[in-house]
Length: 302
Image (cartoon, rainbow, N blue to C red):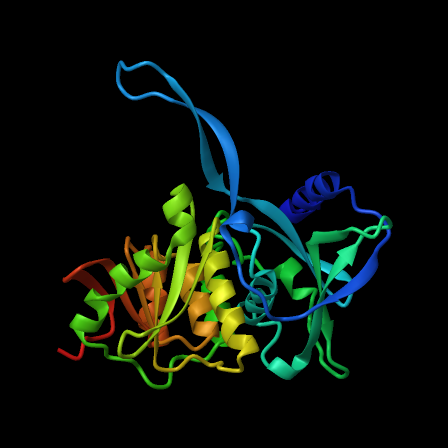
């Protein structure tokens, strides 16, 4: 049976013209600029009955990234370039494939036979003795919200894989109310394009720890988790995750994998997300807009 991943990978190979590779070590540090996250385009702007105007604009960058573990391809994701190492590390953590920082020795980009870096292929070098079940991803029926949750058994499988939150967080409503403004102020790429999701991590008092933007809502969360992974701050007890869009089952699953006790969203949660939060001991807040919010799971301190 041919999977969706096979089709995506075949398109990816045509896009990147992959050849034999030489490898280059990339350090874990690095930032992200608008030059990486946006692309210039020419548009025709129409506003009512006024004359059409040709102008330059910016759109969110979207490119494939092939994830390899020990040279074996495990996934291809469509992402906004930037913080790729965090994305890959976070992906492996939230899929339950990697649990300890010491399991990952390095991440390396591929070079083609012309010596040019293939920045759309990133390989994870495992530490000696580290064991990762890469075949799990081929059996993983809940990694993409585009496919939906196949069955209750799939949801139960996730709950068994990741332990429930041991110490629920009960934030103050004033803390939650102040989060959206902080997120918007940190969304530089969204301000330029209007086309990127964002995930932000705050401490229990509402102090911003890290924010990541990506064309994929789940990628932004993986980048946040990857940031914590490299800083050796997992699990993320006593933290609040704020996402700029809706909350799906997968967002809650990934948050639980990272030990995040409270998830808030500007938009709505899905039914599966609510059920998952209630079962896992996570707090879930939706429609967080100023002092207005809906609490779907958990309790506030006031």
